[in-house]
Length: 174
Image 1 (cartoon, helix red, strand yellow):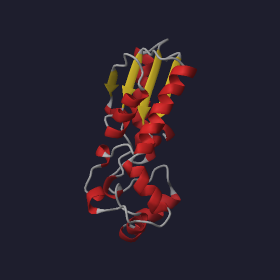
Image 2 (image 1 turned 45 degrees about the horizontal axis):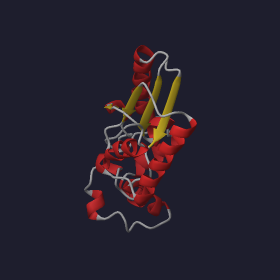
Image 3 (image 1 turned 45 degrees about the vertical axis):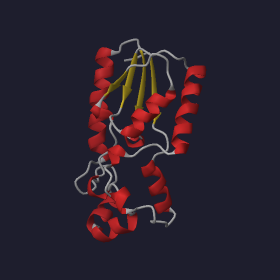
Image 4 (image 1 turned 135 degrees about the vertical axis):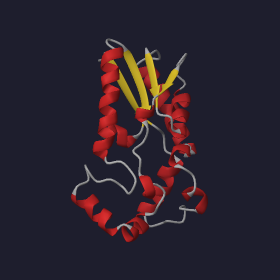
């Protein structure tokens, strides 16, 4: 395994903004434009850009500016975060295994609509969150399999190295 492993979650994104408002009962940001944009294309908000820049400065100051390996999810918000970390001479390797959990049919759907349209699925989510799959999506247990194969790669290829990864919250949770 690497001697040092730094894992960074992407900055605040358009999807985070919309979902945050939805959690407060405001579904007005679930516009047709948002709902028709695939989640992998969601960009960082201004706040997310600032978070990424601050994180990069902190990493350079507290951890160091040079790593042996740089990995990033293929999603736009993670690639933007990686670039805004501003790590000198970073050559980012895009790795599909680092992508966000696939939320399937509900990725850009307000919670109330999900509970109304998929009543049985919403019940299963309450009962067994680890193995619950959104319609046409992945369970957190499914994501864990990707995490495992990624860590197997680190174990094989990055012995004694310094590695930085930019990914998503659900990947980190898994």
